[in-house]
Image 1 (cartoon, rainbow, N blue to C red):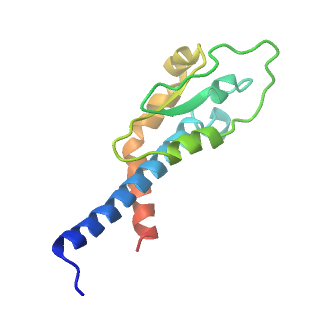
Image 2 (cartoon, rainbow, N blue to C red):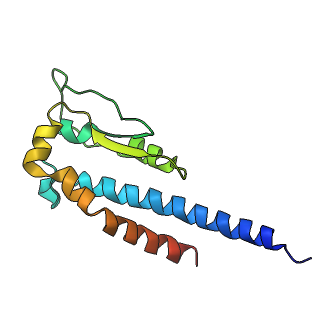
Image 3 (cartoon, rainbow, N blue to C red):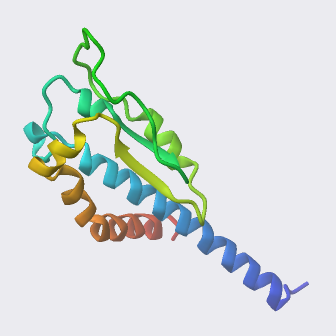
Length: 139
């Protein structure tokens, strides 16, 4: 039996909602990778002990929280992107993803190195790249 117009429109709408969410997730991950790329790897993020980079976090519909001051005896470590990726993966249409640094000196470092601003200025490219990837995957 042929599908009604309403059923066809519902299927098309759902397909595009899935594609839109996938594009948002991919673009947010691209932005995260961009903002977290260290100066030594061609990005703008300054890294000494890694506390600033490790203070990067994400939240849906609220401001992310975390340590603002480097703990006594902090040991340099590589940033673990899994917690941010998990938040990004939960994005639904209508959510507001908030990415940011909790280190108390992040605004001063941003003023000097523009790591967040420069990544944000690339947002359109991140979205376009993500949209192409999603379109190719759904063909």
